[in-house]
Amino acid sequence: MSVVTKLERLREIALDQYGFVTTAQAVDEGVSHAELSTMVARGRLERVAHGVYRVPQVAATAFDQLQLAVLWTGVPEACLSHDTALDVWDISDINPNRVHVTVARRRRIRRSGGEVFVVHREDLAPDQITWWEGIRTVTVPTAIEQCIASLVPTYLIRQALERAGRTSLLPAVEGERLTRMLEERDGGA
Image 1 (cartoon, rainbow, N blue to C red):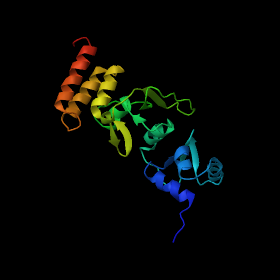
Image 2: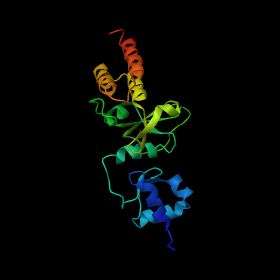
Image 3: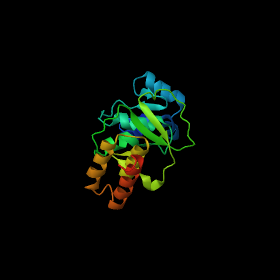
Image 4: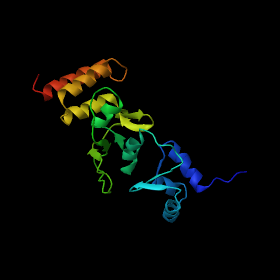
């Protein structure tokens, strides 16, 4: 019978989260705050943000910053949204310079280290959230609607509507609704 160490348990969690584990997840696994500090001091974990650690044995990927943004919020409903969601769904040439995440309206994020993240507050229905590459992300229709509301340039939204409309990611009825919403925003143009 093999004994699974606390670090191995954290590594198992981190494998599903691009190498990251949160303080809350560690505590749930029976790892104390003091033990986390010891693991950091010994180089077994890296503290990357408030409440988020990286297991260095897990290889880095291009999606790490996106997963970090969601975990950094410290709330379970956090998801990629707005400009970032348009980008990850690859339906627009948008190139956000910060990672956009959405949390529930009642949430107040008061932690440092989020300078590269934009936190939006919106109560999303369960059917507005899905998974992209293992990271909670708003659906394509929700991302487009958020971008219309946040005044993303019209040409980028039209591009998203066109590209997503050729896939199963945007049902025709949703495409029509969002097109009307964009036209109303732009004064009937």
